[in-house]
Length: 472
Image (cartoon, rainbow, N blue to C red; front, side, top):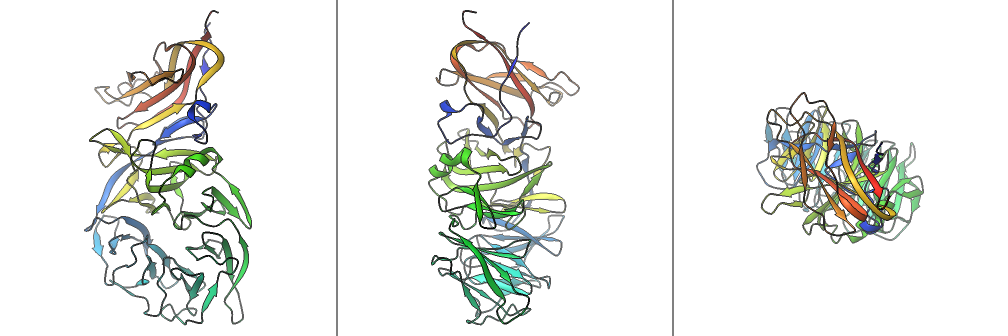
């Protein structure tokens, strides 16, 4: 009787050492993730929802039941459930940075993007106040509007209930460190989190007295990328000054990126890096919870631009997302610039387009979304013969022509991968879930890639081999 040995599929990627040294982890999971049963599921694709009148990079939020979209061109739009778009730009956003939104208790919104703060309370945006600081981040707590000041270690606040009043004396300095404040977040616990390159400080509001805020604590972790910050799982998540992805709660920070430390260190450009759902809306899809981190201009392993990482923060597993260049068949940057939940759905801001992240669709606005999983090396310290290889996978999803396929290829002893071997996934109604791929020869080490470019749902449960020592 043949002994089938399962390949280890139930962990995320490990990119902290060379692929040849990885054992027990995956070395690549692209446009997919490990589900709660230890199998692999495909990440949903993008469906166009609403085109915008300009081609700027889109950041999303919501106000009074409508979607609000701000673009890098300084425009602000309102979009309803039926994808009707209305330009709300009276005073354009200035500064050219990523838009940060703050909703108030009066049903209005304040927006900062590195220049003057604008207010949305009617049909058009307006200048909040000529006396407000030039700001990259704005927040709202207990009736106070707060804003950082560009290139300084100060943040300003208004009197309670008077967002248009900015007194130059109503300011606080982040005095735990002399570095500039580059990010501000109000958490669901009413904490004011201020970050700079060298430190993070927490302020809180007071219930009485003339001073509305006080500093509770500070840490020396720092925030390396101002827009790569989110509150999730009752903690703050960000990149510290060592470019480690850390979970900070109270004054304790724990690194959560040991599996991909070398990958993060190799990122050559963090310009416009971001985490989606700021301040406290991580990505929830199909029962899974993720933090999405992107360095849009970084060089990836394919030599193209864009590194997008998907972190399962409950199970501490990392994956990657990519788009696709149809001209040369190369993975490129995943096309999103933001994401936001609304109306029980998840939307993604692109460039001049708002997409919906949609279950049951596995392409990105009609372009290929390649799903790929690559194992670590299989080795027993002696020469092996792979007699058989099989997948346990969802079938009956290939349509009436059964043209959808799954493909496997192998690298032996660290040599280049061989040709793809493809199998059809079958017509609807095919219930047999096992597909065999035959023999993969003799070597000391084997590494497998499993891939599909078809617009199909991938549910890979197991990958198994019959491996026998040579000479036995």
